[in-house]
Image 1 (cartoon, rainbow, N blue to C red):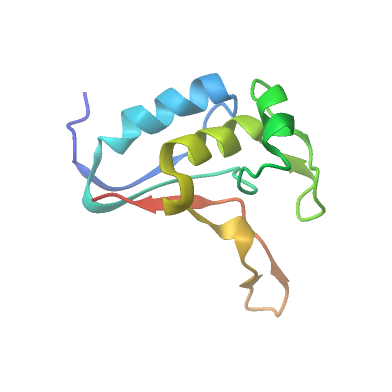
Image 2: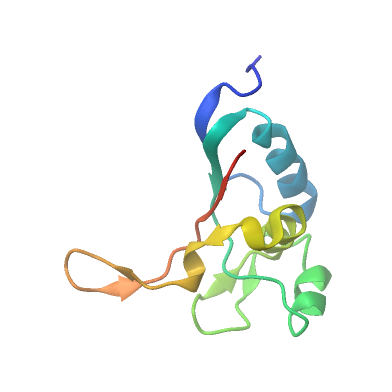
Length: 116
């Protein structure tokens, strides 16, 4: 019902399992116009050699206790899907501090990719 390349921005925040996240990304990616942004929620980090097995073992879970102190929980399915589909092209807000107007700082779980 939605034409391809008809949106400048699509934000995905659905089921967090790997099996649901991968098709969500593929379905909505083609709906974003060139120069637009595809983004989503609940991507707390990148896949590394040290954490690959942990996230793969939990890819069907909605969330798991975080293996690092930056967040209380992680969403393995989202982390794996974003890594496999976009790799280093994905911008992860979890990798940088964000300064709020009241002086507090923290990190976000948003990921985004510019679509060409």
